Length: 308
Ligand SMILES: Nc1ncnc2c1ncn2[C@@H]1O[C@H](COP(=O)(O)OP(=O)(O)OP(=O)(O)O)[C@@H](O)[C@H]1O
Image 1 (cartoon, rainbow, N blue to C red):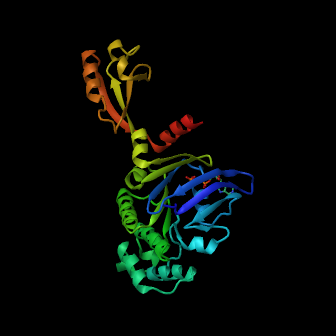
Image 2 (tube, rainbow, N blue to C red):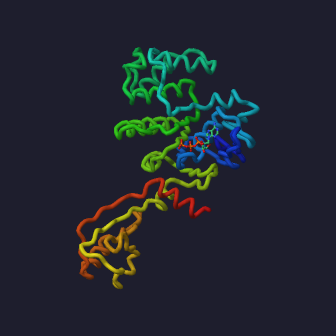
């Protein structure tokens, strides 16, 4: 099957001379959810804005549904919906008019049944006659999605859909994305939250310093990155790791006061049970223990190290 989006050797140098994208090539399959991850300033917004036609590339090409975004801009753009990070700003505008207006922008005829369906899908139908200022933060986010869907795009871009929102709203957005995927919409989202990519994405791409450093099936990536750290605060400091514990891959930190164990959450065994029993056999006591999951930033650092 031909990809719905094909990006070839895309390069973007901003007017100040900064090279934000360095020869990016990427293919997005129809119907997939693709998460684009990357640290701050990696080039995520530049990449999706370029694909959506908001930024003109310095070189390279993009095709959407077979239409070249430069030669056939209108046809390509018509297939794309973009949900920006910013909240809607027209406080007195009425919800349903926003959708009608969006269709108008694409030169599409009025379609009240479709507007109704979209608002119902996003549980905004009760608010159809409300001004934007009367919506909660979560409703405003959903309205941004509704607006982007009003012209029936085949591909939806979500730029950090859940940045700065609470857990409940995050899960709400995940359900929205799931529903869209079921309807066959291809979804590309940018995010800082590994949990979000884990929950929603079929594939994950990692961008760093303007380069795509990895594109991987989500499950495979999570196996690779799903590491956790167990930290044991020792009752008495150690000078070195005792011999019987050397095979456990521990590291001694904080001047011998802490033992750190990294394990794979997706592995068949975490090795924690055998570690605790080996510690007990060696007479090592600990005061406290806690676990931490590596953050996406940590993972990027690892990835960048491996790839550079
Ligand atoms: N208009 C511009 N002129 C010059 N440089 C820019 C411009 N827009 C973005 N940049 C630079 O390009 C790089 C990539 O920015 P971009 O916004 O694409 O990153 P991002 O991955 O979306 O970051 P974040 O996660 O912080 O939103 C950054 O170094 C940024 O400073």
